[in-house]
Amino acid sequence: MHNPAMLPAGAPGSIRGRFPARALAAAIALLGIALGAAGCGSDIDNRPAKWSFISATITEPGCATVACHSAVAQRAGVNLSARDVGFDSLVMRNFVIPGDPIDSPVVFLMHAQGSIRMPPDLPLPEVDIQLFERWILNGANND
Amino acid sequence: MPTIPSPMRRIVLRVFAGVLFVCLYLALASGRAEAYPQFQFSSGTNRCSQCHYSPAGGGLITSWGRDESGDTLSLGGDGAFLHGAWSPPSWLALGADFRLAGTWNDVGGDQSPQTAFFPMQADLYARVAFNDSVSFYVSGGAHGEVRPKEGTATTSAGTFSEDFGSVGDRFMSREHYLMWRPSATGPYARIGKFYAPYGLRFVEHIFYVRRFTGYNLYNETYNLSGGYVADEWELHLTAFTPPPSGFPDQLQSVGLRENGVAIYYERRFNGMSALAAQTRLGIGQEASHYQGGLVGKLWLEKAKMLVLGEADIVRTEVAAASAGETGFVSYIGPTFFPIRGLMVTGAYERYQEDLSVKGTGRNAFDLEVNFFPWAHFEFVLLGRYQMIGTGAPDATSASLIMGQLHYYL
Image (tube, rainbow over all chains, first blue to last red):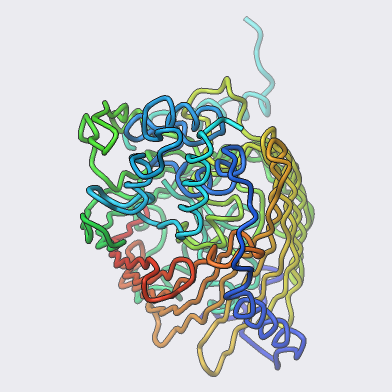
């Protein structure tokens, strides 16, 4: 630890004093919020099985990372960075077979069947895969 | 031939020399520029900007930060640029980060676990000071590549050419900005590309509070930002926009393409704790995100332990679907500093993308050891276990062990 005399102007120097109770309360509240949120939610999934929703809430944050399916990387030629290019990548390239979730390769990839799991660092929850499957079953439109 | 007035000539020469040096520097080598929030309070520093040129922390470290790296954070050594062998002139600051990583990743399925060894980071930094108030900062490097380039990629949908070329093709400038900052504390303003100050900003971009709040790797935006940094508090206000689509890949970002504002306010108490409130409002063509949360930091001197916590609520609105969802993302964990040069972090993370739907959550448990045997060197060992979805026995889980060798110049 530096000699406080050597600290730049405004540096706090050594740790001192007792921490305020409100800071501790805030830390505990944070922990409570974090733990309390675990397991939230209903068993009924009312999210819309639409590509615009799936793209914005699942594939863009989960798949379009810098070294994977972003616009600058496009691993395997797949760009999931936005709704239209993501639709083209999946549907026009036959990763998705409209109306047939069972034979759609993207579902195999998500379930790691015959391939590395996608996303390989952050598997999708089963309810998200089911949302994908409902969208495919509904015709896999760019809706 | 007109002569340039002396002060102006000096500035022009500095700009020219700085740009030339940066260009050479970047041409010769091939990214991340993050901070270590674990060092706030624990190292006796109150503000992130004591160790970093950025007023909100992260990126190139100051001479004070370099001294700290040798005298306080590591077991020894000289933290100065080039280990003190050569000092750049006072108007120029240079630095670099290099990371090599090895991973063991088990996400279940037919081809897990997988191992990989890869260059994780090669970033170069430069800061040119035009005078006591105005400076220009630039960083750039090639982003990491966990999976090797194979030329083709075979998936269940067929075989595809991998358009994922050389290091040069992966080069991106993560940050470049012009800053007015007349003193270490007080007001500042900057314009350019960087992360809008928000959240804990860990080095580990895989942490949920980075990944799902718009601060994943290479998510920097173009910003007009200003604020005030004092010993006991700091405020950062930022208007942001994504890189224009016409910009070359080297100046692009990935992630959310939204226009908006971010506000971060941190209040510190007695040099040992802090509480921050933050919000980020981004409006995009397809989707918009409205988020806000709290950050808490608490240093316990006797226990040599720093507790960091962050919790955010994220509202996503998808215009085309006429629908939205409200998610939650959090981090909490203690970092122990049992001896000089060593820190051990345990953390619990929670991310639930839609609080109204059960099974959309993820829990992560992290154990990370950072060892700084000598200034400029760091060894990192990270273990991470994720429970995906409901957490039921048949739900997916993911395990990661990652080792890193980090060298900074």
